[in-house]
Image 1: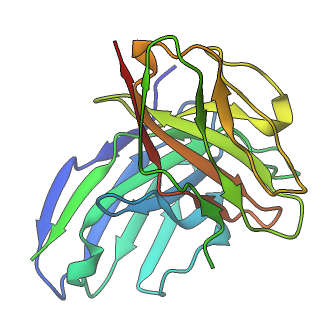
Image 2 (image 1 turned 180 degrees about the horizontal axis):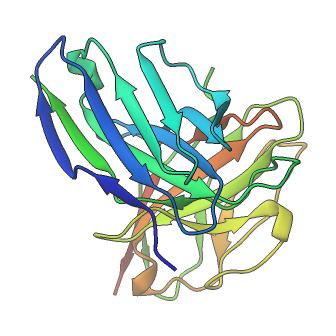
Amino acid sequence: ETGVTQSPTHLIKTRGQQVTLRCSSQSGHNTVSWYQQALGQGPQFIFQYYREEENGRGNFPPRFSGLQFPNYSSELNVNALELDDSALYLCASSLADRGLKGETQYFGPGTRLLVL
Amino acid sequence: AQRVTQPEKLLSVFKGAPVELKCNYSYSGSPELFWYVQYSRQRLQLLLRHISRESIKGFTADLNKGETSFHLKKPFAQEEDSAMYYCALSTPGNQFYFGTGTSLTVIP
């Protein structure tokens, strides 16, 4: 059983650019959630994907978008980067049943994004 | 609106002393409450969830709907308990909220 992996580990971008972060979910999991964690803060929920469809979204603007693929891996895309987007981006996978209750989430190591 | 509040950013206790990490939440429906822990240089991981009513590594947490609290407790702290602890809430609509975390240090 492989755990959640994320790539890249670190990334530096400039304001206005676009970025794509990737996440491979744990084997057998069908749900992926993305979080933004600024320094000294708790994770902030961006959105969740269940079986390739967005299944819940936090208070983030539309320039934060995502995808989930048939193998349940996922991408987080951020357009028009702003300085405040600098943060650790965490991906978490889980196995949700049809009721989509709060199943245990397994977190990846994160991607640290710096926007200059 | 802040859904999950952890009032203590830092908490230090002596080994063998009781420890309580506070968590209050704001949600009118039926949330699920969790405690996550992050040990040094490790990933964030689930410690316990209220629905399972388990005791993990000697920690327990009781959901008090009247006080909207979900405090984490352990009767005798160990050095290996030193970590960052996050209280989290999930809603029936699949929204997730984490608190800002409490850094626990257990002094030998």
